[in-house]
Image 1 (spheres, rainbow, N blue to C red):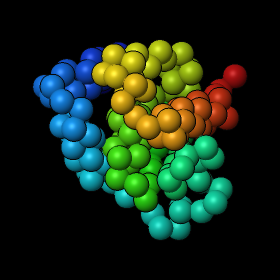
Image 2: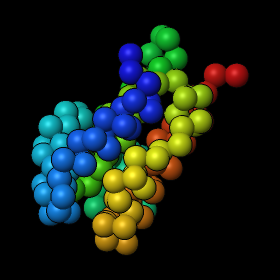
Image 3: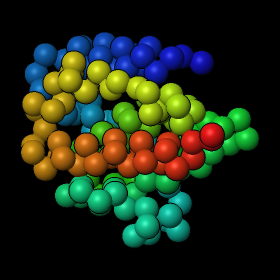
Length: 140
């Protein structure tokens, strides 16, 4: 299995193929289109991420090895691309890995600077919720 940092470097390389942010947004939209949908029964208020302008549902389960698995959906296609990137980085990881990860790819590809303030706030809320799940599932 690739390390979290290897996956982040892959994402950086993928975004580096595009010079213009319009092209990077298109790529983000394509990533969002490929996100496997969560079950409709999981689209509940309990699974909504607070702090996102659009609606984003995120679920998390832990397998017998202690690895966390995420599923998500959003009613906004760019937001769907953002949560797809986060799931790509964090899915199948332990709570400790998730809580100890520096998400350097976000700054490196310029997401914060090129997202609207509301989308950047939503991205922060998604990261926060993933880390909250990791803390909830953390084994002592």
